[in-house]
Length: 522
Image (cartoon, rainbow, N blue to C red; front, side):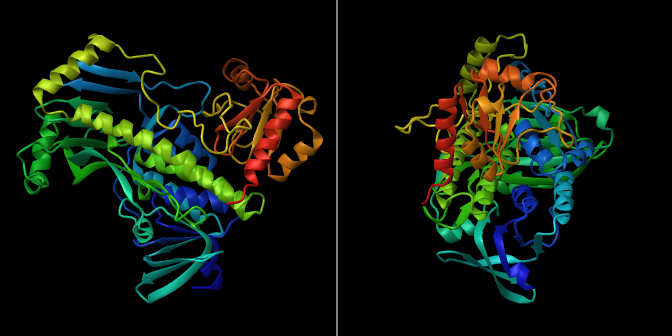
């Protein structure tokens, strides 16, 4: 192993989708990244099967959008039915013209990982060490030292920062001895990944069957791939549940047999909801957790991988600014402040859905059915209320690096995601996602003091005057007027709205607040 591999800017432990996205984001910015992955080959079977439009946008920004087309398909709705086939919940997952990506996409995970690995291989500052297991970790004031074990023996790696993306059984989390807050929910499920011989005989679904006799799930796992999941029923031992014979028995609920499908794998696992109490080694520590190393959740909202990718999208740009010397290390304290509560909301949603779908008590299920049928009607019509179904990852954030008043109260208009509309940009047409961007309806010179514009540029930021030539469909202008209620909004590199301003004095306060937050020391 050469010196470059041993002395890098960031070490990443784990090279699943979360570690892959983080590594690519950092290497795209020119930082030297070494990844330690204990397995010699990528896992070649699906686990995650869905991503949302925010994650799609991130994947597009790192350059894998075109490679996803053959392994993904649109998810049209989210449906829950009871054992009698009556629709309890039905939410359309519509394509919003203000966004490039659909609200939900089903995909085949090995295809996604293949695209991410290929993209990583294109980046000269990214090195992946497969067959290397992390076995020791030491932090110093200005560096992190990782001991890894491979076939040839143990070696030492060093970096300025380290991120544990090494899954639910994370070595990094265990080494840090981080307590974990867990929900009361725990249920055993079996996931069966199947390739139907005739895909048209098993059309893509996104249906949760809340049947007290056998709770089960019917999902697309991307084109020509299906995922069926089943709850272990009371009285059945885990050993009897976790057999190939039982997998085929359960699959008959959906008409699936060895004559019409190939069972790629079956796996029984325990669904849990938990969130690490700390996502960093300490307040000024150099080690972070992300993805399943920080949180795990039941699969019923399809948000496990998505939440992890949102984690690293948040952390990557902050590490970038700190590594460049453009930000104080105190900025990294906003990572946990922003991401942990958001992840907890997603854990709670996933647990709630798991409890709703997995009810096996007929009395409780009767109350559930009555309440849901009364709330949404019994005709099975989909809901069009955008607030009726909690969209993970799209809730407004208030804690962290956002527009605040002098008394530290959040004053931003709404820190949700900025739209992704058509523009005159020649590459991917995206205005946001690389650095801070100030979008303005007015000539920026009327709102921004030159010295502040220079400071923003020093952070890699830019100011975009949203003329009709730039904002081709008028989407951003309409969004500013109708949703933000101001002529200008400052967008963070992770697509969140930092804040907004109407007058020159408000803009001065807005930008000064950003620069103060960016320069914070631990």
